[in-house]
Structures are given as C-alpha cells and as structure tokens.
Amino acid sequence: MIVGLDMGGTHIDAVIIEDGQIINTVKKPTDRDNLFKAIWTTLEELLSGYDKSKIERINLSTTVSTNAIVEDKTSPVGMIIQSGPGIKGDFLACGDENVFISGYVDHRGTVVQDIDTAEVKRGLELFKEKGIDTCAVVTKFSTRNPSHEITVKELAKTHFNHVTMGHSTSGKLNFPRRVFTSYLNSAVYDTFNEFSDNIKKSMEREGIDAPLFILKADGGTMNLSTAEEKPVETILSGPAASFMGLNAMLRTDKDALLLDIGGTTTDIFFLADGVPLFEPLGIKIDKYKTLVRAIYSHSIGLGGDSTIHIEDGNMKIGPKREGKPYAFGGPKPTPTDAMIVLGLIEEGDRDRAFKAMNQVANGFNMTAENAANKVLDVMGNMIKNEVDNLLYEINSHPVYTVRELLYGKKIKPQVINVIGGPAKMLQPTLEEKFNIPCYYPENYHIANAVGAALAKITTEITMIADTAKGILSVPELEVYETIDKNYTLDLARKRAMELLKESAISRGAKEEELELEIVEENVFNMVRGFFTSGQNIRIKAQVKPGLIQELRGDRFV
Image 1 (spheres, one colour):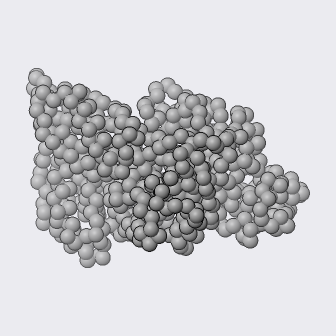
Image 2 (cartoon, rainbow, N blue to C red):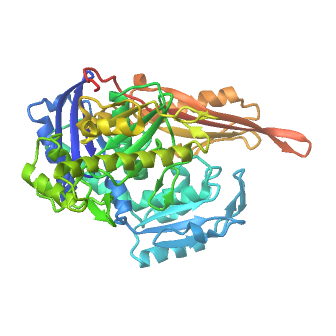
Image 3 (tube, rainbow, N blue to C red):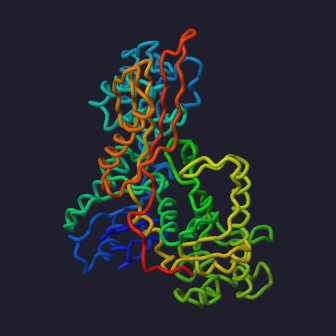
C-alpha cells in the first residue's frame, strides 16, 4: 500500500494505491496558516479504516521550501565565497552577509594559493555577531578539489546549525549557480527540518512505521534523511507531482502539451516523442539560477480560484488568488463561479455564482451566462498565448529531454493531456483553441497525489577521472579515490554504475526498481609539451525517473 500526498496552493490531495489500483482518495483545502495540521488531518481522513501497518511508503510533494523562498521567509545565511582570480565576486553576493576569502584551486584541482584560516575565522565571527546560525561555503573549483570547503566546514561546524559545502550540491561546473544553490540549501534548511520533525513526531504518535519520501523537481523522490541534508532539492516538487500524475494516467509517445490547471496556478509541460523536456542546467527559483535538476515546467497565475477583474474594458483573470470562489463565500468572482453558472460544477451556492457573473457581465453589457462563457474563452486564450510563446522559445534552442539532447528537434504538440480541478470543464475550450485532441483522466482532480505516490527514487552523479593526477572524484557523494595512469573509460563506466547504485539505495531505493543509465560521457587527452600525459574522463549517470508501478483501472476521457 502506497500513500501519495500533494500539497498544492489551494488543496491538499491524498491517495492510497495498492497493486496499481486507486483504493481511496481525499481532497481538502490547504490551510496556509497551519500547513502541518492540514496535511495531518488529510492523512487521518485518508487512512481511516485502513491497516496502517500495510503502508509500504508515503510519498510527499511539499511546497515548504518553495514557499519559504518565494515569500522571503528563509533563514539568514552567511556566505563564504572563494572566487579566485579573473572574476569579480560582487554579483555572487546572495546571503545576509558575504565574506570573500583569498586562496585558489585551479580547474585541474591543484591548490595554487592556500586558504587563509584567519580570514575565515574573522568571517565566522562576523556571522555570529550578526546572529546568523547557518552558513555556506563555496570555492570556485571545489568539484575538482574540495579541500578548502572542507577546511571551512571544520572551522564552522561547532558554531553553526548547518554548513552547506558547494561541491556536495552538484558535480556540474557552474560556479555562480553553485553559489546560489548552496545559499538556498542553507536558507531553507531550518524551515524544512522543522517541517520534517513535525511529520516524524506525528507519524510516531499515530503508529505509522512507514518510510517517508519527498518528491524532487526531477520527478523522482528521495528519503527524508537525504531531504533534510539537501532541502534545496525539494524546490518545485509540486510541478513534479503534476508531471508524474500526467505520466501515470495519460501515457503517450507523441509530442504533447501537458497541463495541470489548479486553483491558483496552471503548470505547463512538454513531451518530445513522449519523453519529458528537461532543464539542461537547473531550475530558476525567484531570482536565483541553480544547479537543481528538474523537468522543464512553467507556471502562470491562472486557476479556478483566480480573481476576475475588468481593466480598461478588458477581462483579466489572475494572477492573484484572493480567497475562495464567490459561490463558496469568497470576496471576488472567479472562473469556478463561471463554471457553476454554466452547470459544469454542481457544488457551491448557485445564486452567489450568478451574482459574481453579473458583476463581470456589467462591464460588457451581457448576461451572466455569456459572461461565464467569456471567462472560459479568456482562460483558453491565456493558456494558448503562453504555450505559443514557450514553444517559440523552446524551438529556438536545442531540445533537452530526460534521455538526450535532440539536435534539430522542433516540438509540435499533437495532443493535450490535462489534469487539475477545472480539467474536465476546460477540455472543449482547449480543443477549440489548439485544434488538437484534449484528454483528461477519470481521477483528474487528484492526479498530483497519484504522481507523488508512484514516483521512483532518482539521483544523478558526475564523475571525473583524471589519470594524469591519479584522482577519481564524484563531488555529490564526496567520493575521492586514487586511480592509476592506465584507468580506462570502461572502468570508469563500471565504477560510476556501482557508485550510482549505492547512492540510490542509500536514498531508500529498492534494487529491483532501479534503471541506471549513463547520459553523458567524454574522454579528453591531457597534453604536456608534445606528449599525452594522461586522460580526463567525464561521466554523468542517473537513475532514470519513472513510476514504481503502472496504474491500472483509470480511464481517460
């Protein structure tokens, strides 16, 4: 028995899946003032009458880290940054206090200038004076040699709650993105771990002894202990749940447009020949570009509960959500009110829904029903315009998918798959606007929870084997091993698979669930003078995102 829980901006969705069958679902409003209580009462209702000892795992999609960043409710962070020569460090400043230290490691991992520990200690003292309890240290080529970051952590760890080291966040080369990723990891550390502690205490109190996994932005999961150390990886887990729900319930091998239309936002995804597009470098959250790997997604402030207002004689929907729909006691007209007026939704106060649409209709000299139809038309146009702009941008660059880089590929959706509360109601409008078939699954309203429940554990590693220096490194795992000058690409592939497997199992994966693959490999000859001095072997490997089990018994419409 698998439990999936998706914490959205408007609702918390929960589901129990057993042997590929959905056996119970719950949908409850999100209480932003007491998020933890909302989650737990949802779980209590979901599990009432079921044997809790049969729960194999609980997969949770949480907005805790994302909300902390977007709403500027993160913890203060002290940043220690070693940028080395050739780069002015000011633009990297991102914490509450930034200390730029001397010292330098070159691109081969050779220490050119030692770290000045007195400088570091003065920086740490400054953080303490400012009341900062969390810090991060990032040095320019720490993925090649992390010794300076390790030295700083040793100096800091007894005085700070948490120290993020840049090389542990990603093995990819991109110094500015690593700085911002490390900052965000420390900034959300306390928030996420408070959330984690509450979840664990409540599970213990309720007698649930099942492992808890957190959904990541790449559509995979990691166990709670890993998430506690790397909470930055939980950013944008909501869109990941959307995608995995779409993938589980509406499979296709075509170019496709995928939509999750919720109460607050619409999340947009694309498939290339049935394979999800991927962010090649990492996601951007707020103003920060990161190295957090992710499925390509784009969100707009448009949902069933978005506020409708008239501006300069034009109907505007969103991007704000100012409360419940008018028909449910809310303050402003929303698309949900329009759907009630048109008989597409049976819940809510129909008289209040008509009052809401009459408010809208007054601006256009039309009936409430015509105003309601106009609302759906405007929603369709907004989605169509946004998708057209995204496709223009995507098709102007190489297309990256979870499997490979597709040179010359142009995405041209042949089908729309849609989930979320308004999915059924907007299907005809979407088909009309895009002139292609549009489908929604039977359980479209709780698809995100299904996606969270069925997501596999994923992880990625970046290996560099430098035979001239005799060092093999996997920065994300903090693995540094000695190799000889005869080390080959075949040996590197084998070792990468071994380490990837170990990493996945440490994150809670079952060996039989793993799909390991090498997604990138390169070999460069190292030349000194007129002679080859060795090779630089680079391998990127991943546990491929996917579903724990196929969903059975769900229909699409």
